[in-house]
Image (tube, rainbow, N blue to C red):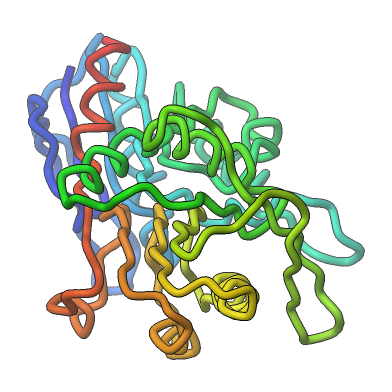
Length: 290
């Protein structure tokens, strides 16, 4: 087995590394050259396909080149599966989740592995196997290490119920959660409690923090119900723009996030943000699949 890194920066895994060069001609076109002989080898390509979209093309080019030159199989490990929210048919709108899956299939990919895909719909739209790894146990171990005491576990919307239950089982040994429902009214996002009993200290579990609108709406509702301490657990920290900063004024005092995408340099030294390495989760899966 050889591992190739297509669009680092993602921390290198402790797996045998294959060598390839990826460069651009003066006109901007990509070119891949393999240094390692991959004939009849099992290969893994690791990288992010988060924007800019050149990252996606680079991963596809490397995957295609490996398969073209004799790799028996190529698994694409995409810690953050970009475009995973484009998973529903909407009038006159694109559905890029399906397109991304078809592109990896066309490039010769055998399987795609990611961490915490946005929804179960993603796998149904891919024409090849898509494995979504749960980071629940990883987060639970780190938070136990940090001495975080038991809290109420909250899902900010109905789509995240299973994710929150997985974390609750890993963290508390039972899958009792509080579930909110999300409603959009024009440009306004509202959440309301659907079921469950709140305590004064809660942990919100979600797949990503992009602009943070959902997490802000949920935190506002929790604060209005007397919650005094909020911890947020997210798999993918995009931290787009600055609107999410209001979380710190809504009784949020800590955010745990995986390193599936590079953390913005401006946040690297913020003591309120704990970055949890995900390499061990990926390595365990890859070794099990050998």
